[in-house]
Amino acid sequence: MGESKATGESKEGVDGHAGAIPPGRGDACDAAFGAALGAIKDAALEYLRGLGTQAVSARGGDRLPERPLPLEGAGADAALRELVGLSEQRSVASAGPRYFHYVVGGATPAALAADWWTSSLDQLASSASGSPLAVELEVLVTKWLAELVHLDPDAYTGVLVTGATAANFVGLAAARQWAGERRGVDVAEEGLAGLPPIRVLTSGFVHASVVKSLAMLGLGRASMERFSRDNRGTLDVAAMEERLQELRGVPVILVGTAGEVNAGRFDPLQELARLKDEHGAWLHVDAAFGLFARAAPSAGPLAAGLEAADSIASDAHKWLNVPYDCGFAFVAQRALLAKSFRLVADYLPPADGQPQRVPANLGPESSRRARALPIFATLAAYGRQGIETMVEGHLALARHLADLVRDAPDLDLVDEPCLNIVPFRFAPRGIRKRDWDALNQEIGREVLRDGRVHVGTTRYRSVVCFRPAIANWRMERQDVELLVRVIRELGGAALDRGRSAEEG
Ligand SMILES: *Cc1c(COP(=O)(O)O)cnc(C)c1O
Image (tube, rainbow, N blue to C red; front, side):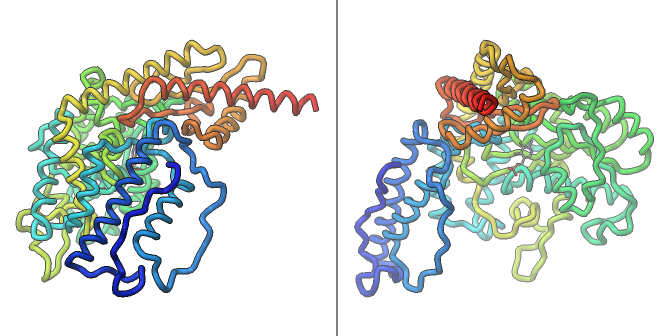
């Protein structure tokens, strides 16, 4: 980012010190906004320009020093200049094209600008009486998202939440309400105490946030049973089916995963849909990023069967490339959501009026940000074709990365990529295979320190490996090529260190 550029001429505080809150109207107010927003616009443009080439890691060595709350403020100009400076030191370039860690998208220009606009409007998106704009756009964009991924927009109620963790919570809350009703209990009213346990069956692909949601919902982490038949976590359909026979009469929630985090694999959703039908179960699918496979013709079939799900969790801040935080849940039975999340007080709109006009009655949050605006902007700006082109481009980059790994004598492709994650490891000849895990862990730490790219390690198929995810709209071939170069270079250096330690 270079030297900080937050140097707007501020007229604030003309009547007092720089730290006085400016007048709420008039020339001084306009000038204060102009200076603050102008300074941040300049700094942002410079930051965004540097994202493709600057170090990805936080650059400053030390943590931010503690400091007392200032008594007298320094003024917006100085405060923003300081904030931009701290960001140069301590932020991670996760919005850029060399960040392969976790599954992280960036923000398209339309989405980023709309997010600034969202803060400018500062809407209360709890109900249409708080903001018609926010609520009407939320209804519209959740329908657009369903259309984008070839789901029937009228079959689901969409709710925007903070991320897929919250979306899993929402979908499983509806499932919990359903399971209670099967036993004649309204769980939202009476709680779970009178009920026998509800069982949750899934594969080894299940995400940690589903487990966390079960804990938050009072179903308990131990309500989950995993059926996997290999070291990937692949669903053992026969074993799950057998268990369903045993559980006849017990309400069962099946959880499928569309895009797991190690290799982007999918549970066989059509099989899960069949089991749901045959056993009268609820089907929840965690499709945090895998949902967007359905926006790409080449990957869509991986998620066939999703349309049978009772509830679906997904993220817009991952593959759709809108800024954090933004996830969404689709739930087929709106009444179950309304029962779970009803918010009642005399000063609030009636909970049973027009539910979709009151998102606070359909999800966990009351006050909430107008998350629909960046989604609206990015979908309106780039359309179905734009998203399809981006996703297909990422799939091509994943195939290119896998080819580079196959061609490198010291790299090992741990699994064929089936989506946008490519698990691989540094696997040089001449050292014992059982030392590869420790070696890759060491390289994993070095990569983050090195900072040219960011990528995480995992344990997958019983080995330690890297799991780069490709989800940022700015990524190009040069970025995945750099990733491979850096891993091989740091791997070679780690080997050399090991050898000289042995000799010395
Ligand atoms: C990222 C992810 C989540 C959690 O989403 P957040 O947006 O981090 O809350 C859940 N499931 C899967 C498969 C994910 O990839």
